[in-house]
Image (cartoon, rainbow, N blue to C red):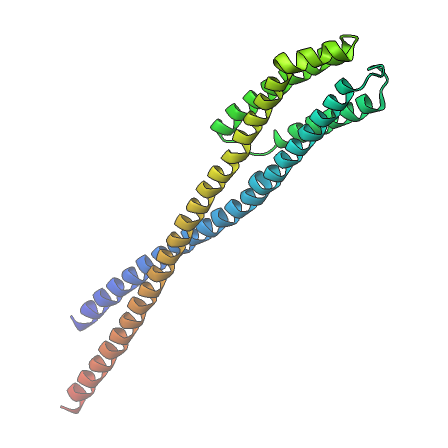
Length: 224
């Protein structure tokens, strides 16, 4: 009878310890996942936000220089074709295209893709007008086009680029918020691990105490 009772208690204890072990492993798995997601968020913050934001400012810089060169060409009286300034302007165009191609390889949210497409359309329209102004044959006619539609196209391109730059901050804040959630989850998992460790300690103390009680009872029975 005593043997059956002792075996039953041992089986209950073993089952509880098995459940606690499974919970500990599950918590450990979830904790590792949270740490992995936090790491991914920081990597994405650098690769998909910080670097692209720098590239976008680089595009803005090239647009500024290109517009300055365009105005210098239109103000001058020399032949437009074969101009050194025209070569420099085309160089800036190639740099802008290169950065855009690089930017498209990063992770883009839906709104970001939409803003990028709008910027590319505005940039394409600006480049078409620039080609028209530079190939029209005279600086005077080029200036007329610039004043009527060219300047507006430049401002439109810069506005689209500004919107694309601003969204970097918004998406970055979303990543920070997600990281905070993952950090909070990691703290919860750590607390649960501490609680399970305390439960295991209490169970061990109870098992030892129960074993001592059984031993004392057995000794008394033998003495009688």
